[in-house]
Amino acid sequence: MTWVTGADGSPYGVTNLPYGVFRQNGGPSRIGVRIGSWVFDLAAAEAAELVLAAGTLCRPVLNDFMALGRPQWTAVRQRITELLTDPAHRAAVEPLLVPLDDVELLLPIEVADYVDFYSSEHHASNVGQIFRPGQPPLLPNWKHLPIGYHGRAGTVVVSGTPVTRPTGQRASAEGPVTGPSVRLDIEAEVGFVVGVPSALGDRVAVDDFAEHVFGVVLVNDWSARDIQAWEYQPLGPFLGKSFATSVSAWVTPLDALADAFVPAPDQDPPVVDYLRDVPHLGLDLRLAVEWNGDQVSEPPFATMYWTPAQQLAHLTVNGASLRTGDLYASGTVSGPDRGQVGSFLELTWGGAEPVKVGGESRTFLDDGDTVTITATAPGPDGTTIALGEVSGTVRPAR
Image 1 (cartoon, one colour):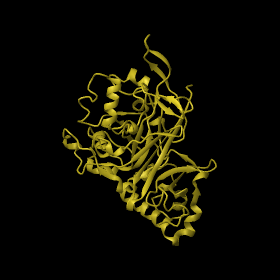
Image 2 (spheres, rainbow, N blue to C red; image 1 turned 60 degrees about the vertical axis):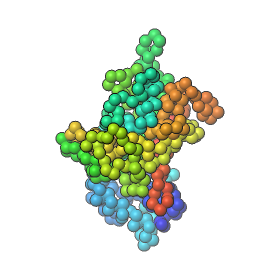
Image 3 (cartoon, one colour; image 1 turned 30 degrees about the vertical axis):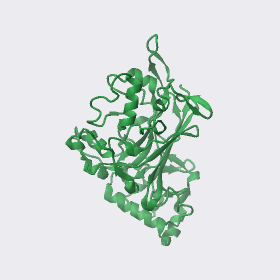
Image 4 (cartoon, rainbow, N blue to C red; image 1 turned 90 degrees about the vertical axis):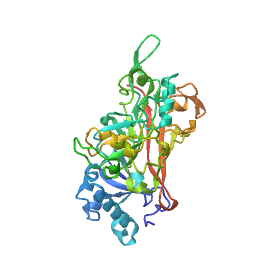
């Protein structure tokens, strides 16, 4: 129970407490934590010595705090929980609660590197059938390692940032043409934010996932399917993906998801030693995709073939170092049914089977379209917690 007005029963209650960065009236960036429809100003709380985190909560982004490591993350979370639940602290804390409607939410981290994986068997199989008809949907390596590629950290933007339609090359009957993408798509994903770095040359074991990963964000890795289809062989995604990746403004700490870990799908054939995570656990996150306000899909993250711990182990097995602020995303989340897919490429089967959105027949994104991805997870004692939404509106090409 919390004394904060309206927060009890909220999916952003005291068992959640996601971190973000905000500002008021054009002022400086400040770190806060969400409780109900309020933002608890942690910069002010640390300045008043209500919370102690080596001065890192007074910084403009979360990176310095995330670098402190799990013991400090846990201690600060416990202290915030105490401040928001013990009425003895109400007089000191209540003036530091800012209405959510009065703030502008900013990108919560300085993104160091960005990696996108391809970890849903259902999504990979669907894309294989659409892009490579008549061939096996999964390539021979897919069940042996988490496939991934390096994205562009500089084009990661916070939820609500407009997305400009990308321009690039695409195939036509007369040969390649250059112009705005005509098959603009989404990818509903879950992202993992690294707090504690690793040394160049070291490998991070699957068992050390929770010591390095600070928390979770929702991701929309916007995709230009026509640009992608022309460029992706032999080296994979490039301009079809790098123009924008949207992330939620709130980072849900791993501690808030303790009740959401569930057995992940069985892996056959057995994985090699460095990918063997025991117990083999994924997260029971239930995503929902809205297209111009119409819910069109409910992707289930629990069906993902490769787990977040396996992805992190694979990312570093060659000795690649982690940096504070690294973001790695799961890849598109898709379940076995058409109503559980995380891309419009799958929803409309490559554009061949349009869907109704707002009473209109649609395949890919038009200028002015807005896509919003939300997610919930089980919390303690049968409660539900929400992850911060990620939303974006398509603007015309420049």
